[in-house]
Image: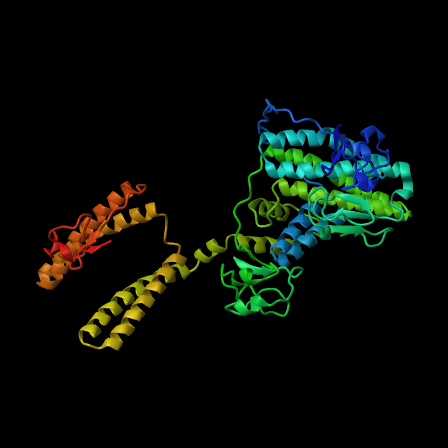
Amino acid sequence: MKKYICNICGFVYDEATGHPDTGIAPGTEWKDVPSDWVCPLCGAPKEDFKEKAVKVATVAPASSVQDDSTDDLRELSNGEVSALFSNLSKGCEKQYLEEAADLFGQLSSYYKSKTMPSEEKYFDDLLALIEADLNSSYLTGNEIAESFADRGSLRALAWGEKVTLMLNSLINRYKLEKDSLTENTNIYVCDICGFVFIGDEAPDICPVCKVPKIKLTKVQRGQQNARS
Amino acid sequence: MHAVRNIKLCTKDCLCLYVCPTGATDTETGQIDALKCLDGCRACVDACPSHAISLVPDEYPPQQIKSTAVKNSLLALSESKAKQEAIAEEILKSTENPAIQQLAKAISASNKLMIEDLLREAGYMLPQSQNVKDFIQTLLDTSQPEDFPKEATERLLELLSKNLSMEENKMSNNKTLDNLMAAFTGESEANRRYLAYSRKAKKDGNKNAAKLFKAASDAETIHALKHFEVANKVGTTHDNLLDAIAGETHEYKEMYPEFLEIAETEGNDEAIRTFTYAMKAEEVHARLYKEALENVDDIEEVFYYLCPLCGNIEKVRPDKCALCGLPGDKFIKY
């Protein structure tokens, strides 16, 4: 009997015990689990599971990345500057610095208003960028952050990669299932890590960053109530 | 560190009102009055049954340094996420289908949060950090469109700078440091003066005046020590020993010899005696401070014996004081 682990939230499906709560009898082999079965914790589809490897001793990476890139950082796009400031605004809110939070908010809105509209506007354009993120940028990022033992960055990369995997599967599912994907159910976004969850009720904790339910915000249907 | 209340957690049990020594917790807005809150008091933090109150630092340590290679790899992702956010917004705008709009909003929000997190880790985590201030300064230093919120940006920079360099601001370009040191000198002198008055009153049998002088003398010590501390004059023990050596050496090599010469010219025998005792004792003090500096890391306990008559200090109780001849059993052990 084998075990399979969810790439997104780490939920483990054990063939020996099955998952009776979602109708999978003990002893059900992974290949016999229905293809529309989703992760009971985070809603990830079956294809986002992989076989749980037996732990082997890990070998320390031989290569180490030198910090020889002394070039200045590239200029941030207006969209990025807007996010940089909105995040600092949240940072001030946490410190109860209302005036500074408000000023950062003003700067964030200003840069948001200066963002150029995207010429690309299809789900497939999103999928192309997501694919590049998953197949290249996260791999490189993890390797570099690991070589500098930068735990904070590794944490951000781990969360971001899981959220991106989820977006990837959601967009692919939408392409197949169309509007029925979200019919009669809800979409929630985690305010902390950006995890997107489709389900009637938000999970008790975010499957990615583990914040309590109160931080998962319901996204309304239609154009109204766009999130700030 | 001052206290702040998380309104979402506050269950209005109001124990914070009972324990606050200054009334800072009792406000209409539910927030704690930072100006009244005592630095680091935390009485309300410990009393709050719903754990709604915490302490917020007034100053933060410098941010973790990020390597350029890590930053670049995080920025590569934030660039991609910013494009995805913009695409999701275009999808939202270009459809009438509420299901697509809902999904596009979720994707846009999700990407925005990921950009925020990536940039936070790329060195822009703490609002008051030098990185953030430099970034804002660059915006002010480069030419911006007319509608750029310049005043808001300048005000923001001012707020952030004030917050970080609070201590520096307090101590630079003002007379307060001079005044603190003048007050320290005055209070120190008053402390000794009242002690002398207290001894006199005691000798004369005026117990109450003696007590008051002694209490006031101790009060001036409290003031003097606080002024000295606020003036930021207490360094590491290593530095303090160096300072003490310099002070004692100046006294026994320069100050007292000069004073003695004048006292001799003027024929003031009592002054000659007290200056001589002090000069010799300061030389001993300087030597002891030097020894203490050399052995500053030793953990073995050392005892000191003080001559209550002339101020000589010995490391072993002597038969009699080497400076003034007082019997060794009168020495005070430290």
